[in-house]
Length: 100
Image 1 (cartoon, one colour):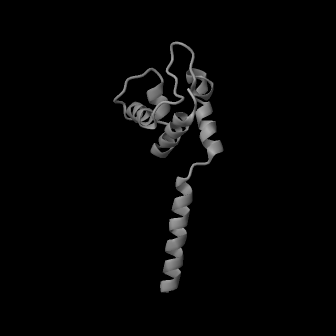
Image 2 (tube, helix red, strand yellow):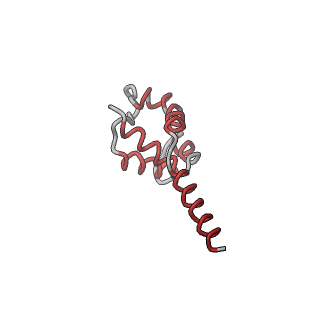
Image 3 (tube, rainbow, N blue to C red):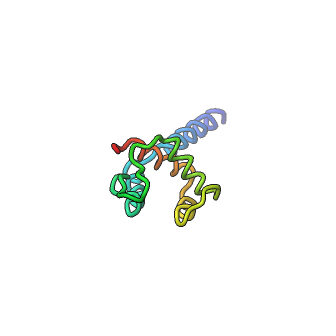
């Protein structure tokens, strides 16, 4: 019985580890939705914030502030509510790695 519990625990730990790794294609697909306002690959035209190359912590904080309503917006507060905290982390990581 102890062996089965050990195996089950190991499998659960392995699956949890897999779930926390982002699929790069999925993250790029999520980021593509940002292009209409923030430009292709996060480089915006005048009048809108560029996301590419910004510090991850800054991007993550802004998105979380939109999500929890502490940062006012016309659209972003609604969009941010559609992402999990993990997805916000993944998007912040993605845009922070892009060249501005």
